Image 1: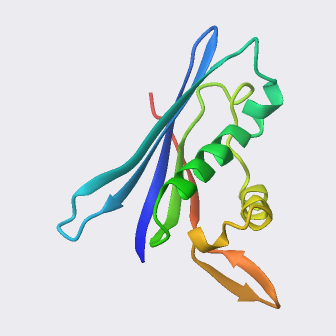
Image 2: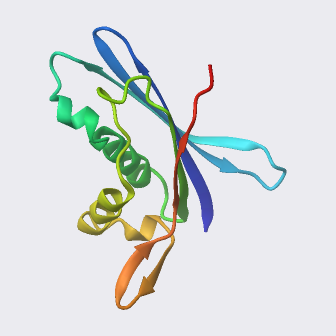
Length: 132
């Protein structure tokens, strides 16, 4: 299995919200190789605010990467840049993301283990802090 991570970097402007993401894989020589890059621009007055606030757009972007890569790639980490305005754009919670993977039958795309008969997703879900 080849491990990869997804990093989100978003921009909020007066009329738009841009959700940008990059999936990368660390090569044996230590270099990062871009596997997938995507961006979605939402007109703030046209998109339901809940879609952005709950982080649902990020979950859909992650799914897009998962189905776009070969089966031998596994997502091990997702990093979110701290939103510029968390009242407009939020980070999805890990429990919602895990449930989404189960419902969409995407558990083969992430490492898992079982506890008391329940499947547990073994990826890191992190939010970076912005300074300055």
